[in-house]
Image 1 (cartoon, helix red, strand yellow):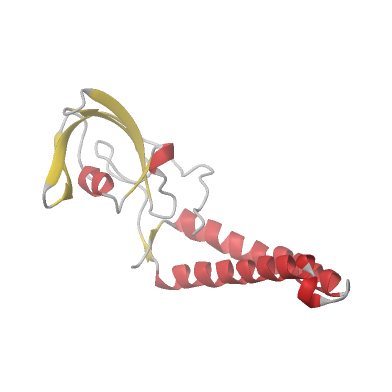
Image 2: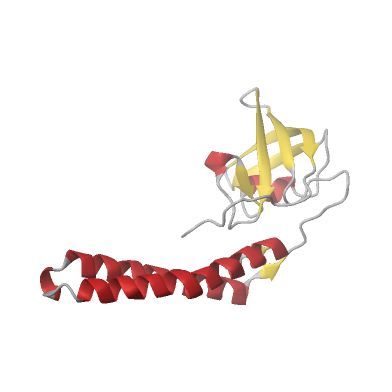
Length: 167
């Protein structure tokens, strides 16, 4: 699946890759060397832990580089009166008689437990492009869906300091 990223996402991912290559890689290689010097490698927990940390760093670098290579760049601004990326929306859920607040973000930033809803999620897909006051059907799957009313759309200028999710 191609990740849909904003220019800001791409910049943050590039910065993480650079930090991992220039700073963390050197530190982790040094930790492996130091642990190796402590003797018998078969019973050296420090060596195995340092080697594992180094491999995890290299794996993360490869993952991020592959993500950038296949990413689709999306615009993070929308029309003044409609829901777009990085907008916060207040929704009235008819079935539950509750009001919920979400922020629409790219999939690498999504975290529903923190109120960050991905544009790839059923809610994100359904809300994009809609306006305040509209009643929107959220299709979860072929057998289930529900209606929400968009109470408020709060425009945000940037993605602030959301973290890129680790996988």
